[in-house]
Structure formats: C-alpha cells, structure tokens
Amino acid sequence: MPDQVTEQELKDRLSLIETMIAEGRRTTGSWGWTFVLWGVAYYVAIAWTIWGHYPLAWPITMVAASVLTAVLATRRRRSQPRTTMGRAIGSIWVAMGITMFILFFSLGLSGRLVDQQAFVALVAAMLGTSNATSSLILKWKAQFACAIVWWAAAVISCFGTFMQSSIAGVAAIFLCQIAFGIYATIYESSKRGQVVHHA
Amino acid sequence: MPELPELNPVIHGKLRLALLSLLSGVEEAEFTWLRSKTGSTDGNLGAQLLKLEDAGYVVVEKKFVSRKPQTIYRMTEAGRHALTEYVQALKQLLGGAIGG
Image (cartoon, rainbow over all chains, first blue to last red; front, top):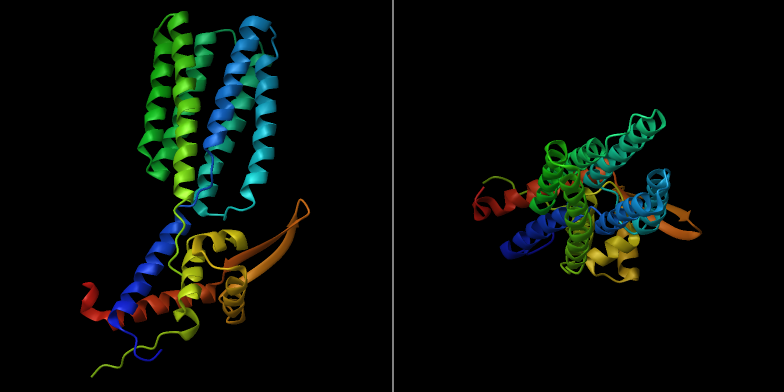
C-alpha cells in the first residue's frame, strides 16, 4: 500500500471509480442524426408517392435510407466504445427495420397492401414499440413520449378518417423523427462536452 | 487489531485507475475515446496503458479500419478481478467513514 494515504485520497479514488464506470456505461453513441435522416426519408417517400405516383417510391427510399444509415454509422462508430447497452439498443432498431422491410415488401408484392390507413397504423405501432423499448432501456422519458405519439397515430389511423390518419402520420414523423432527432443530437453533443478530467 | 488490506500499486495510480474503471463499463474502447474521457496526453496515456497491459489487466488490439489505424483496449478477467479487489480494499480501509 502506498505510504501515508489520507482518508480523503481514498474517498477521491472511490469517487473516481464510480464516475468513470458511469461515464463508460452511459456511452451509447450519437444516434440523434438517424432519427432526422429517417424522418426526411419518410417525407420523401410520402411526397414521391403522392405527387410522383411511383409505386416503388417507398422501397427505393427505404433501401437508400438504410444504405446511407449503414455507411454513416460505420464512419461515426469508429471512435465510440462498444457497450452492451449500445448493442442492445442497436439490435432493437436493426431487428425492427428488417421486420418492417420483410413485412411491407411481402405485403406489397402480394398485393395485400391496399389499405393505406392499415399501413400507417402498422408502421406507427412498430415505431412505437421500438421507441418504447429503447426508452425503457435508456430510461429516457422524451423517447417514451415519442412512443406514445406513435401509438396515438396508430389508433387514430384505425378509427379516424383517411385525412385524420394522414395528418396523424405526418405529425408523428415531424415530432418523433425530426424534432426528437434534433433534440437528441443537441442532448448528445452537450453530453460529449462534459469531458471528465479526474485523471 | 485487524490487518489492513494493501492497495494494488498498479491500480492505485490515478490515471490507471480511471482507465480500468472506464474499461469496466464498456466491452472495448479505442485509444482516442479513453484520451477524451481522461483528458490525458497521448504519451502519458500510452505509458499507463502499457503498465496495465504488462500487468495483464488489459489487452490491446491494433487494426486498420478503412486504412486508418485503430488501437482497441479491452479489460481482462484479471483486470476486473483486480479492480474488484481494489474497491473492496478501499472500502475496508475507509471503514465506517463511507457509511458501509
């Protein structure tokens, strides 16, 4: 044992350990930008479908957004540590993305994707599930609020008119993708600014 | 009078303790991330990580990702065990001062 270690020094060491462990664990990477990117992708797909009348607008936009997300994520992930929590959150979104792609691609190909309100309800419910799961793991109330908005949009799409369903979907994209994405990006950069100088 | 535990001198260094604690909360971490979290210089950080590596508390992996070099550090089981023992020794030394 080092000579003449004071009680305060020992307490400082204990505090340093706690701070650093917490610092490592709370690192989940910066993902706010993905919400914005996907929000824009949804709007592009919607606009392309409405004004372009192109049947492949959704699959093309979604595949392009997936590729872009993968490329940008690989570039950004280099400097971030790998954490169990980060992997858990990432798994939720990857699994949800694959599920959505398989489901809607199959429904579209089989000609069963005819009810637009059912489509909005399904997408909103699935996004609500992913946001809720992620928020419960991260203990992030703002993201849980997004889950509630998505679930509300799903219910409105089931019981409302075509117009109400469309408005609910577009509003949910704005609130839970664009606005939340910008908020998350600001929140993450403010967290990154808190560099610990204990050592 | 009960015998007081000894503090592991490899871990007791402030920067080495910070590094081990950081690595205990992640699966693996890059050199640059450890530098940003500790606010240390490249030279000092490299030297302290080498001491931890020599003690068998961390393992290092050097690789190239998109032609850029990456140095990844992982905590070993021995490192985890040593940190746990260090914390227990700290608590024992502090005794009632930290309220159990």
